[in-house]
Amino acid sequence: MRSAVSFDRFDLKILVHLQREGRCSNVDLAESIGLSPSPCLMRTRRLEETGLIRGYSADIALEKLGDHVIVFSEVTLGSHRPDDFRRFEEAAAKYEEIVECYNVSGGYDYLLKIVAPGVGYFQALMEKMLEDDIGIERFASRIVLRQSLGRRGYPLRIIATQKRWD
Image (cartoon, rainbow, N blue to C red):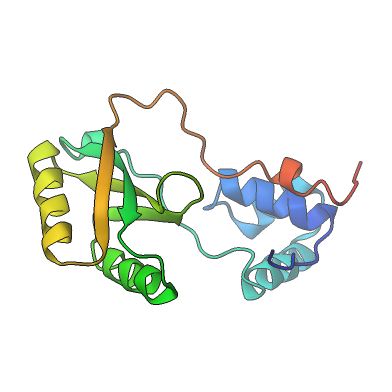
């Protein structure tokens, strides 16, 4: 398990607010969490420097760009040596359509989240991955029909339960 970065209740408030409103000004952020702007900015920069805040991004409405499919693929590798996992992960990182890749426990080795312009494109992508011989023994895919829940961000207040704040 990775070691946690030290933070307090004001840092947690900063993280919770920035997760919701990443484009807010430092003045607005400071006001919303109950600090003056200067210490708020110093805390935010420290959270960035420690890597707790990795970056800021926009939440894009893919449906407004055009047709697309989101697919979750369960991938099983043919061999389970450390080099096999490294080779697969390096190859997966080269495919722009793979937006998330998780090494998981259970009946398969990886869970991929893939975004493609259509089912035919996705099928061609999987065929290419098999042809590239990156260690895939088999895969099973699930095409998303609709998203019934989509939260932006993480349940920070729940994850940070090792500290007790009022």
